[in-house]
Image (cartoon, rainbow, N blue to C red; front, side, top):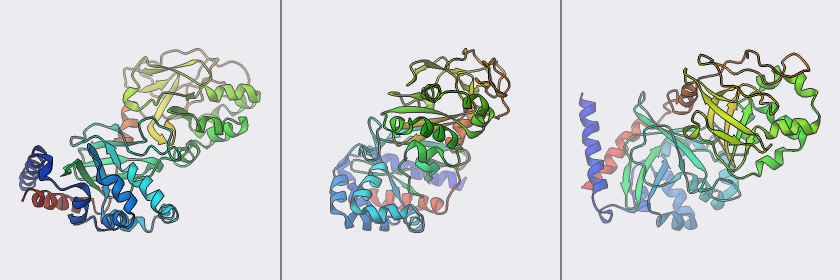
Length: 379
């Protein structure tokens, strides 16, 4: 109860500060300089005057500011090599990915947020590459999700400044890389990448703008390996193009029952959601959603899609997809039960909505930093 009262008081302080005129609040650079817990970030910003000038005048933004703990741990992270090698240019890019467009002081459900990262060297997403955010009501914290399956947590109450708000985060977010890099690890998408390489499509699809990739996992390819091996290179290319939707980034919140998406191959895919709230793309079950890549987003599915197969809605109680190719050899597919387990659409979202997002070291202590900063601002 005491903790709840403290949280309520702190919330009231933040709300009061946000309600005041902007001229009563410090600017972003001053806030970072004066707030305990941002020493490393302050040092970096002052090391690169160009970066400092570029962020100083920004308004209507939400800043995901890495804490001292986050940056200290980053020194031992292999990703730190990119920052060392890239110097000011890369630091500018990294900072841009931690600045969200708009003031988001009430983050609740899982949602994508556009960032200030628009450099064509790193992204081909209209309006800027995205970060996913949510409120984890189990840990009473915010979670932010980026490329390479990197998470960061933050206290739910932001620190206001003249131009927006700051959330102290306990990890440094990762700029989404190419399709090849993002799906070749824990998402088991290497078979799809190998097929793209065999058909000469990889470079083409990775250069597309605003693209959705429906990537079958390795088990899906293995189950129909014989059937795919009998296809010509041209026909295999058409199958792979049927998994690519250019010009549309199909984030989870846009995938509703009955949605149709026109593929690079020319035919449409259909989104189905049955009574069990399982999501399917044609007959393939969805296991993971909202995996950001440099030029769009990836959805992991449990079967290889077939542009020649008939598309039927899944059974109301279906929990997994069915193969669209024969699993034992040549012939046309009639559809059979898949042995690949598919998480529900809700569970897929939960995977990326932070129900299981770990609370990393340093996050809890940042709540006190927010409180101290907010009180200092008001006083």
